[in-house]
Length: 185
Image (cartoon, rainbow, N blue to C red; front, side, top):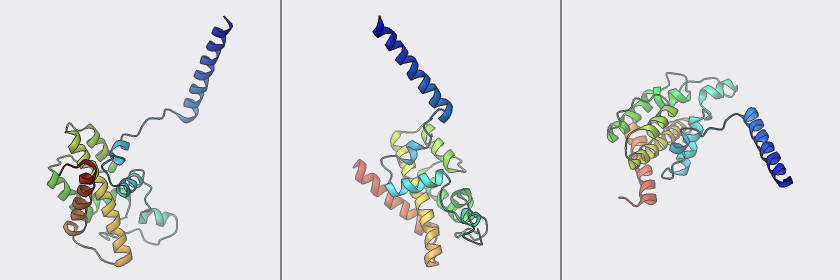
């Protein structure tokens, strides 16, 4: 009888602690983008950059100006608008060309305008698992290579055509990574 009372008291203490944690922290839901960002076919440096971008943690020129580090927040790739995550990967003329080329090459018809919606679309799309893997790897590669291209403009003052610099690099690096991990080609 005493062991039953002790068990009931322990069970209620666990639920009180659990409920208390939930009140303080909130429900911990897994992010819908986590599967896309950390897909095992992604190249790790691409995943890391994608993770930073999807959480709005990249040090864009807009963010650096708010910190007082830069005087200007103009985009390095187009030079026309404020460089923030949305502009850099979706609204910039340069990155829009890159994204459209990748989407045309894949036959990807989705209308995406930010990274979380792109990840959500990949996860929810009624396509094969292999296609989801390809889309996730190319999206992560595209984010990484657009960021890399901005750094090349900053440090080396050179900007190549989108089809030469970013898109070819995405194809080569992403499919190189998928070849190594899946042995399909």
